[in-house]
Image (cartoon, rainbow, N blue to C red; front, side, top):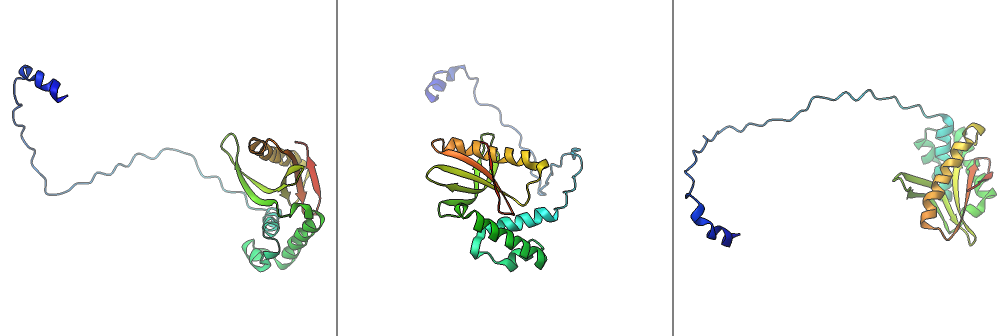
Length: 186
């Protein structure tokens, strides 16, 4: 570029005239940019958590933590009465006794995977056996009105895991507090 400019120097009329300098202010001025607020609607109040949801979350914590769980701490974290804590502890014990195959060394709790659409999914329990990968979702209760929704949920988990572990047969299940495993068609 410098070589090109030197060649074209005869085309230039010369240096530009000096530009006047603006007076320097001794006071600094700060101009905030505050756009006008946009109408975005109003915040919707969150639905109150039901007892069943709270007990289910406490039950999840007990299943995840196993024998290392601190019952008093869980009862406090989930604002549970002693009777509710006994109910949750009994449910966790029942599930662990009836479905001990889900709580083996090759199992992972609260596994996060990302679906094809970028959605973050959290699998309650993933158990690998020689034959299959079991995708388990814990539900405090399995009401007939919610069953299709819960089955669709574990199928979404299966879709995400199928992309990672396509060589392994996937089996899906819903486990309830009464210690029942309901297999879901993949």
